[in-house]
Length: 119
View 1 (cartoon, rainbow, N blue to C red):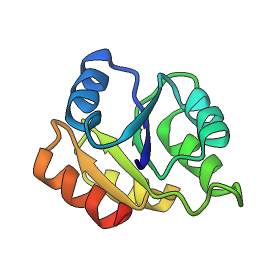
View 2: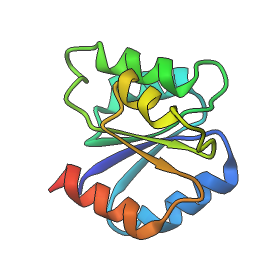
View 3: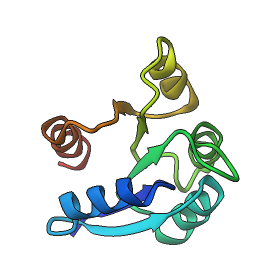
């Protein structure tokens, strides 16, 4: 079973992602960017769903930190953000995200991305 690290600080969003994914994937959840980096190092997941607006360390910095680690750089990171502002996708991709999805999440698009990166 593929392992996904969810880095998200809003409980409602975590619950939604867990409900969507728990039947098909092993899930690990971090509530802030620093915890996300630590769990990425500890768990070495197959994919990371990274909220960009996080406490302690934001998603951009957490992604840069993960992608700069030779042991973790191969892990696909899908950036998630409710802030669908012009330039946000480019900012996420330049921080190292492999893809970017806006919230509220389109379930079909999420599963399409997961299928692309995990299969």
